Image 1 (spheres, rainbow, N blue to C red):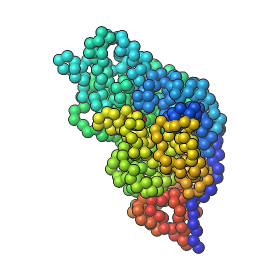
Image 2 (cartoon, helix red, strand yellow; image 1 turned 45 degrees about the vertical axis):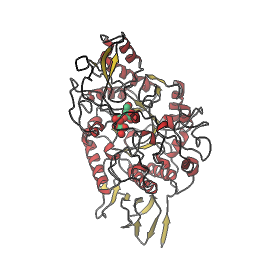
Image 3 (tube, rainbow, N blue to C red; image 1 turned 180 degrees about the vertical axis):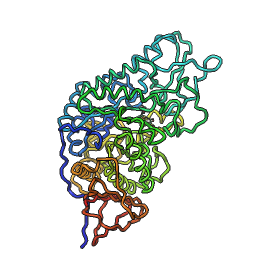
Image 4 (cartoon, protein in one colour; image 1 turned 90 degrees about the vertical axis):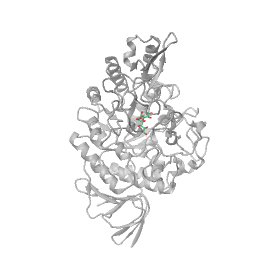
Length: 562
Ligand code: TEU
């Protein structure tokens, strides 16, 4: 007998509003990029009202928590990662009242809210920085940032050889209040993002207070931006020759992954633990190895750290198995859950990464083979959601969105695009606003246009077009998240049991104490015959079962109940 199977109708996601201890250990956390999610007032820019109106969609999708990229008052030199006031909402996103309403609505729907905290640098329009500049070189307020005299005869050279992640020197020279050239200040990112000096007690005090402000507002946690960058090596030593990749965190640098950062997170953990309901901290720490990432999630530090090693792994069984094993092994001694992530607002979406050959990094400028990319992306998502720990989903990946690789230079806004030789620069491609409907000026993003143009082909990728179509990527995500909820074993624990005798290019593992869940993934371009281990729960592509055997199609993942 031959049976044709596609994504089955899985049980409806059941939002569980009751607080659960350790909720974060296996949570699926959905990243909202506020500019691009939903526009409530029709000005072409996403906002809190828009997000609020779409919370039921996220509940029905079946995620546990929502992480919001920054919505604070900001001149938007780096899309909100340049904060001018940590306790205010930027008017383009709404008001504190909107934020309060959003948090309350989310909680009522059983969704948790994680906000983005940007402690490495402020905006150059932050009050502290403006006052430090205006008060002149002798001002004690300058100790809150890194001001230094320049080198050379008249201080015309930067104080050291550090480079900005976005390209160019990491220092900008100031002009004194009397108009003469002055000291330089450090900015690891754009010149509009001066780095705080975390040796200064006022900085630490201020951030403890900011944490409490948002915890009092009811947020369930923080994603900590550039968590590896806060502490700089004493004396700000030169780095000598290096390749730009190192700035991504492939090596310990005098400005990244310094051991001193951990004292900060221990202090923050005490604050988080004062609040009821398990409030969490998530480190955005680009480190050389998963072992160094584990330092951020020791029992008295943060709860989770992004697994960028996983994000950087190509669709290849051997490489995936290795990164899964090393990630789980690194987290076990510190008793933290592993995390898994395929896309975010800083990297080319995985549907486009996997459409291109491996080895191009995380900023890709070519569309590649779209069909192949989507097929692999769907398979990669089922693999990710079967792993123990917590998984991150970036808005739009549930629609199978590709990166927009052909944006005209005139519409680009990524600050790195405008600076020579930065490691980023093409991040706008993953930031194009979400299509909700098949028609309308911005495909239902809002009543007006959208701040980055959406391709016409996105009508067919809209939420409306995909809803109810069992072959759509959206329904695949909905089914996968519903299965994950009804099988708590999937996210639990820190182990996968690899199954023996697996063909090359295929990943096969069981989960749970009883091993009654199996995931098989074929990462090769050819079908592979496998023995049927049980009943099909979910597949990323249509499969055909024959008498206890299955020809597992190319680039396909299957979930089984055993
Ligand atoms: O990113 C930190 C960071 O180091 C990025 O430059 C990252 O290495 C790169 O994008 C990967 O290709 C955070 C935010 O996520 C990013 O959006 C900000 O621009 C940056 O911090 C500065 O705040």
